[in-house]
Image (cartoon, rainbow, N blue to C red; front, side, top):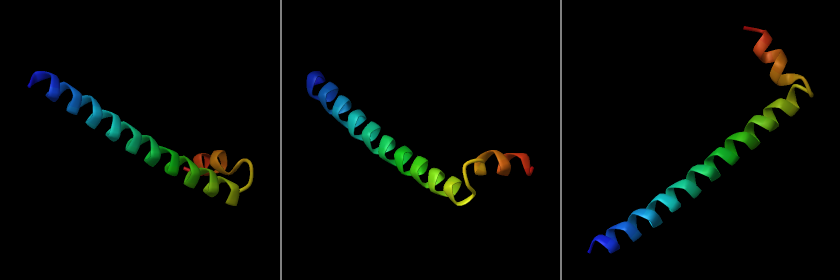
Length: 50
């Protein structure tokens, strides 16, 4: 019984981890696309504008 719970926990954690990494990858891609709209220094210019 305990072994089953451990296996389920590991598999569940792995699935959640993979899903989180996919979300992070999408966020990074979206951020890079936003940067390309502003040119190479877009990110730094936006930070300086605050």
